[in-house]
Length: 491
Ligand code: HEM
Image (cartoon, rainbow, N blue to C red; front, side, top):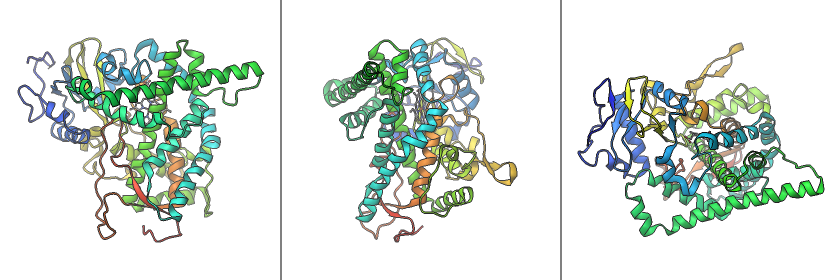
């Protein structure tokens, strides 16, 4: 198999263990968490050097680790597009939605989204929409605490973010118990597998009915969101009453896009991009906090020092949840995302032959990949303690002697992407995370109980992610919970 990919006229290195015909395909057939570890191993062997991979399920391609190369890709989104390779695999789930789209179709959905993520809307989110939802979350935790019952924090967070998106973006009550939610989780796992398994078509031909049913469920729900929004707009017009949330996402999409099927795809894409990533990042945060009780104390002491409060209740306003006010808690969230990025692998296709800053030449149609997971664990970027959870690495001295959040290049830390396709929900995710983390850590103590068959067996099990397009925790995050100061969980 002759590859045209070159650097200064020479072939690129290949990862150790590359086989003559199967190339690196064996790694892609493994569960995804093993593939992620493989990317880390390769990065530790080659550093920032670009290497070529060959996988029967992929067009010719390279893996980049050098932030300069990541910048080149993310800044040139006319050359590096989602392309047919991505679309062919995720078309039936994401359709024409923003996650799959390029060119004008992408631009118009992005514009509609940006209007939705305005500062006044984010303020409404934190000051009006979120507090009653977090209060409901607390009721669920209180009930679990009172009855000494195990509660799965991953499902608690998924409920919170699904209802939040439903409320804020679509003006709908949207519990995570709706069938679309389970259907989406299933479809996300199966579509993720299409990027790894060259035999996925055969597998789906034989056993694809559950996937087809799940996709149908998700699509039907997307159409329902649009019909409900159209109906509500008509009611407001007919009665002359004002829409309580005129700038919600679905209105913005309906104002900008004529084709209702594209609006439905866009709505489902925004919903999946927003609710899963945030719920998963909160799950990994609580997991790491349970393993690092001293970090919980530092969050609490930041709250005490900043808000000068000792009261049991905590009322954080929009103005308080910014990194300039609570840098340590923001650092905790950044550090969690460094180690557990909800979008752990990225793939782009080149529309034309191109040369990278390091001299790598790629022919048209080749793919370029990077594992945000591996960049987050790169010792070259983060130092020898890259594997350690250490929020302090994000802090510098601020004005007046306090701490401030360090700014890091988004090409070294592309957890939210960067450039023209930077995640539109980044600010929302960050504010929401600080609000939820502070509220839960202030009020509760958690003790994980995953994999413990008895109280005597207290060895913590390292948690893995499940196969998916994003990063759900396999098996959820079951734990015991107690009101802080009222029970015997020891920190
Ligand atoms: C911790 C939370 C989040 C993380 C880590 C994250 C990460 C990302 C990443 C890496 C991408 C680029 C993916 C790609 O290449 O297609 C992306 C895109 C996107 N994200 Fe997020 N995201 C988060 C939360 C959110 C939220 C809360 C929303 C909306 C409510 C959102 C909406 C989107 C949208 C619409 C895109 C597509 C942007 C475009 O292609 O122009 N994300 N996000």
